Length: 218
Picture (tube, one colour):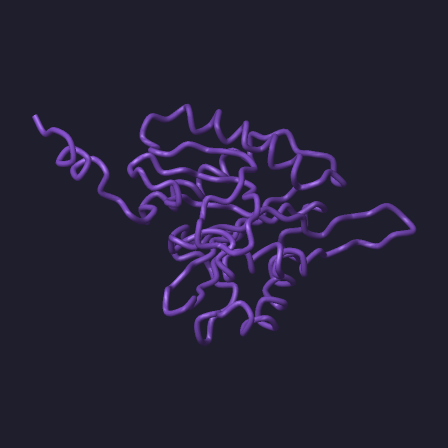
């Protein structure tokens, strides 16, 4: 029997969120959305995410091989972040005592179809800027890991329009986003040819960071 500190050294061996769990999380999110009762198209993202997490937990609990807990909006755990915030959906890895080892999703609405006389709001800036993707770039979220995620709730259901539109703005903001050279909103390297899953690759103070993007049609 291994005792004390030696036991901890055996059990607690992960300092980063395991890369092989990321496709499992992305697939879980997509599967959970398929069985989720879709919200009203003017619903706010906070309430959507709160209800969606309940469904993710139900789907996750159908399996016994996923070593993480799923939490709704919680205070950021990264002590390195100067600007504290609240993460939207957090997957806490159970194989480490370090609370900052997690996978976080920031969630934003896209293509909000406001009724007349208002016009459709793409909300692309909210997705890309300070309260969206930039949360990962600045270290507000996930400052101690190498992967994070964005969920775009496409409120009018037109993911085929939302994805290229967001991609154009990402390219325009490439310097602020610290994108890797000659990259943009790319096809996912871990989810094959799924059209609604993409990724962006960033260089953050010589640390490589990948944001995995899932676009969900409401």
